[in-house]
Length: 327
Ligand code: NDP
Figure 1 (cartoon, helix red, strand yellow):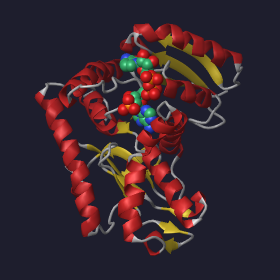
Figure 2 (tube, rainbow, N blue to C red):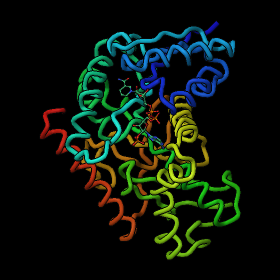
Figure 3 (cartoon, helix red, strand yellow):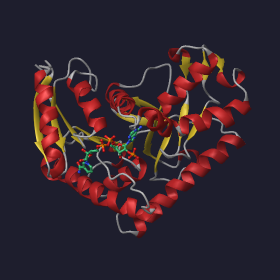
Figure 4 (tube, rainbow, N blue to C red):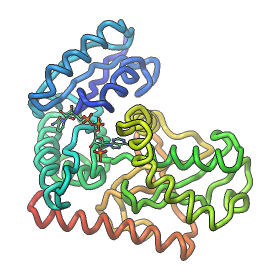
């Protein structure tokens, strides 16, 4: 039988972790033929709850789940990891300045990057979910100098999926008929969901919706969906975030479908004027375990302005963590 893949999940006792682990163990992360060993990393206060989740995972008797180990030490938690899902992060507390937030997360993602550098498997693939995800991914990457830089990615797939669903709802199309939508930039309120290359049932999406809807409805709805869910549910989105993390890694490992690209925050090679080295969302395809940026798209002035604004925010965040000595 196949060798199990080691999957490390941080923040395993949190609410995204709770929605994520059962789907990993049931084969949705890597596919139905790949056994997994889960390595749950938590801070000491989270270990007991992680043990409870591990008991429930055992009680599911998943045929693909080859083992569960729980850690509160990053070096041990990332030992031999093939896939790492960095979910645990320091949330913004009331009155917290951005510098404090970045510094607190530097204290988490710096050591995790070092631990990945020291002990992860050769083929390690990292997805950062914990916010500010793009910059947390950058911190981890810069602390892992021996790991190829392109193994560090951040999640914008939830934004992508939200955009697909909003566009489907507006046009009455099925989600599966929509191709080639893009999220550009930072996973934050400045992100730019771009429909100008998208098609719906083969027709340009921009012929089916008007610019006013795009600007005053679609873009803000996608960007503010997280807040709307907190308002309605009384808790932040968890299952949809976990689902998007599964989509991201599944595509990375198994390849994207031939007929559409997707969105992921990956290290920039300078494409589309995004400064090299930033971890920014792009239109991407995955093949052979590697992401590639879709090249040659025409960028209108409207799109250019939106992309530049989000990328400027990423530059500010990078400069801030550089100023704090975190990278
Ligand atoms: P969640 O599981 O709800 O969220 C975890 C992280 O995911 C947050 O940073 C959150 O950012 C982020 N996130 C990204 N996208 C989304 C989305 N669409 N919706 C909601 N969240 C999103 O947090 P919990 O507080 O329930 O759990 C966090 C766990 O992490 C705790 O068990 C804690 O002990 C642990 N932890 C572990 C660490 C470690 O392993 N070293 C370090 C720090 C914490 P945002 O807050 O901006 O929504």
